[in-house]
Amino acid sequence: MLEIIKPLALGLGFGWMLQKAGLTHYARIVNIYRLRDMTVMQFMLVALLVGGILVQAGVDLGLSSALVVPATLLLANFVGGVVFGVGMATAGYCPGTIVAEAGEGRLDAWIGGLSGLFVGAIIFGLLQPVIMPVLARIGSLGHVTLAQLLGASPWLVLLVFGELVVIVLVLVARIGKRAT
Amino acid sequence: MRVVLLAALAVGFATARPAAAQCPANASSCITCHETRGARPVLQAGQIWHDDHGFGDLCASCHGGDREAVDADAAHLGMRSNPLDDPSASCAGCHDDYAARADRYRPFLARAEQDRSGPPPRPTSPASAATTTTSIANVVLAVAAVVLAFVLYLLRERLVPARAGHRSLRAWLTAKSWSPYLAGAGLGLIVAISEGVCGRPLFASGAFDKLAAYVGKPLFPSSQYYQYLVSPGFTWPVWLMVGVLGGSFLSSRLSHEARLRWLPDTQWVPRFGPSRTLRFALAFFGAALVQIGAGIAGGCTSGLAISGGAVLAPAAFVFMAGMFAGGIPTALLWYRGRRDV
Image (tube, rainbow over all chains, first blue to last red; front, side, top):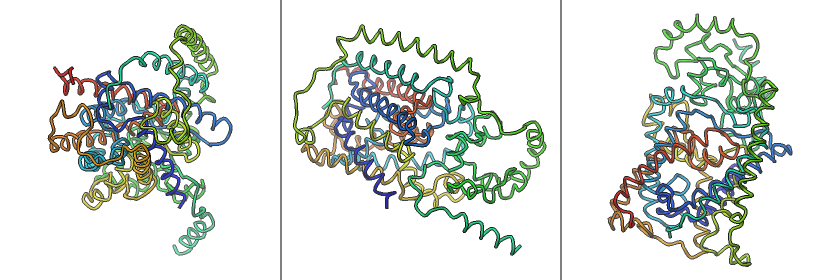
């Protein structure tokens, strides 16, 4: 039962934040690629930084046992990102925001978006055995963090990263918001 | 034979894990212990064999054992340390010509076993890394931190955005939108709970892989992916998306933004016209690409870029670079000559 309640609760907060940040608008998602609306970047960078500090604090305080680290496969991460970006700039979607758009009552997300995700998942399932062994071979660094890769203190990496994030946010704050 | 079976059963019962393990990671326990927690990792050790087979969470496909057991003894029950000892069990799942392949690789693997003494070292672990590189990296980072602090000092006038006046809780909850900084901080908290407490990234795309497997598994009986890698299931990632649906509904309902509509509110109609069919077609096409891209990259905006970025995994930043490399030309193409829209 907890295995249902926990993800439901996390999802509720996730959907709430996506909707409140206005990421459920086609224009807002597409215009980040036209460099006209930086809301998505502001939202993501702050989420990343706050999440990073809390997760690292949790590990250091002994509240959580280990970091959940995705595999760095340089070529696969990049190629996947390119395909993702093409789709995102075409439809104004990413997987999470399609579901959030559906929650707002947007029928294009219900009809076009959700079915597209479903069919895309099937296509990836068929492509996976063909392309992934090749893509994953190049630039495979494993489940590492930047701190492990550099052999540096994670807090120092977070500090430099945090400063960079704040500078970027200050610099993009003037880019206009045309959406909604 | 019967004795062996009985013994195996006895061990199985004796080491049975508790029925509801708390928030198990979505990766196999093999990956969680060996790779993420760093107990005898193999995927980064530079062995060609593991490089070639490390594109998925495949450990148990070749080595056997119980990929879901959290107890080390239970997980290693029935494990094959050398999968080539029994290729019909280890390799046949994916390779039809397993016998020929096994013959080809056996001498190579025997040599590799001889060369290797003890567990492979983890090149990137702080414990085994030379202390000199550690201190150099730390010094460089410290210098960078000071330089960036100076840049921030120069930008100090622009650091504090205009503050909104005091608002009641009710006004907050029913607001049409929040500052992206505030909503982003909220999402950061949720990511931290998901990763730190539940041991899972906050992924969105995974749910659709699980749902698509309901169709893929019966439809493609010879697919290695559907038979061995992704099983259908109404599990964690799917419930997470059900939650997102509810959270967005709740938020938009409270701000009177929830209503049925066919087309995006702004920008779409001036550029693409009022055709619903065109919107559905491009929405479908874009969503499919987004899901395929997330599959290749190993996660989506939330599961890889934000959740992976929060632990400062290089994967997240490479993925984001790819997103812009693909997205900017695409957006330019759709809006070529339409700067007015």
